[in-house]
Image 1 (tube, rainbow, N blue to C red):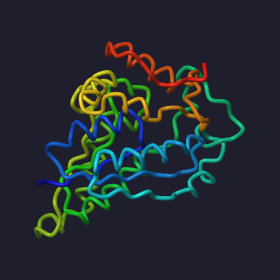
Image 2 (cartoon, rainbow, N blue to C red):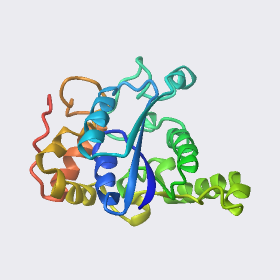
Image 3 (tube, rainbow, N blue to C red):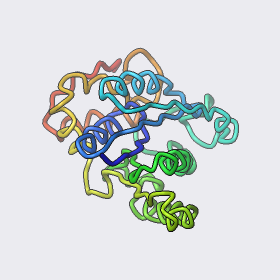
Image 4 (cartoon, rainbow, N blue to C red):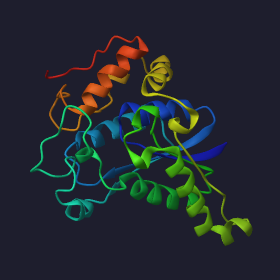
Length: 224
């Protein structure tokens, strides 16, 4: 079976993307601790990596990024308040480029043909989620391993996302719930790190809307 490396946050998008790819690929998950407030997503990632029986799951500590990001965004800054609707302060500068670079390095060593992440059509506000960015990054990475690919030592990779397939967050939910059932509510979306989802941040609101559009009763425990 072909191999795929997936950026695995433990949220709806990455977990359901894993379910989407599971029948076709041997999956290797990679999660990142980058100094985010929502460190509970790492706990969710560990839980679902076992539940979904990933071939291997690595948790990479790149906490030094927090000092580089400073107060540029609300997800790593303790001084800035997380908004309830999209605001550009939520965008962590080229976060996905950082994640995908490391994930792709692992993919080349594994001779995996796919590097996946959970960007979907609802992520249109985020430049590093858009297919045009993904395609250019894919081209750059393959150029960086061009000689190895031509020599047959490396496999050319494709960076896959639900966005490139035209899939929305609610589409992913419909795919995931068929196999995950109620355990899908254990995924973590919240930008904070409380015991339960806060229910008021932009990500929680997106989660609520996705369940609504998918016609699935949302059993997530929210504080509000």
